[in-house]
Image (cartoon, rainbow, N blue to C red; front, side, top):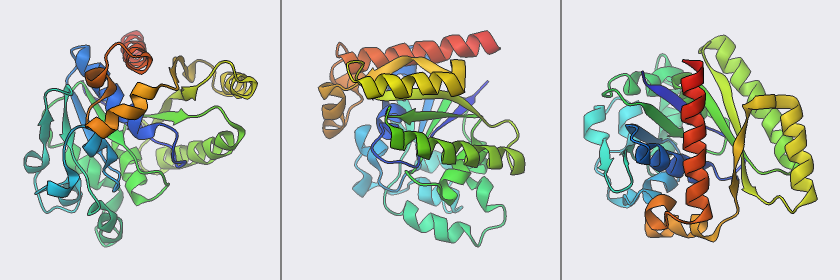
Length: 256
């Protein structure tokens, strides 16, 4: 059965796209069939998958506005280990156009229903709580929240959790926070450890045991259009995302 994750945080620079791309690649490496949905107009997940966002004939924009069927948008990325629904700057216009569409918050959900079965669908959300993010949350079964262990991040986390709760009540009762993922983690930093302790206090076992360290290879991989597992599979970043994928599979097995 397909499980759909939204990778969401309205704060930029927390490793959201890095997590989307590398979790998709890690799950693919563990023999899962994965679809990565780039739902951010910046198109960074597209470029990080080795697909030129400036050369797209069809993107996720055409899909959610009803201009193209999913099969015209779907882009296999066999070396990365997953399929991709790519995005570019055209997606910015979708938020305005969706305002005039009945059921505007369900357009991504309707598009994904036409996909062949995948084990996992991973949606890379934009860094804001807008109509695109709402579409992702309505389409998703659960949310993974990547965040740095800093105090400002805690404030943003509260707003995001409130939004998830509102979407759950209004449009998607199955939606829940699957896990909090600590990114750019440095255990030598006392602030990191303090915030990490607070996360465990408030969210308990929803905080993933796996942490994603600061890693040069993780930062370099997107400029080569590759997930870190393809760029340097022995790096600390690659090992961490494989660990996260394994933890997610174990959690899913335990809950099924």
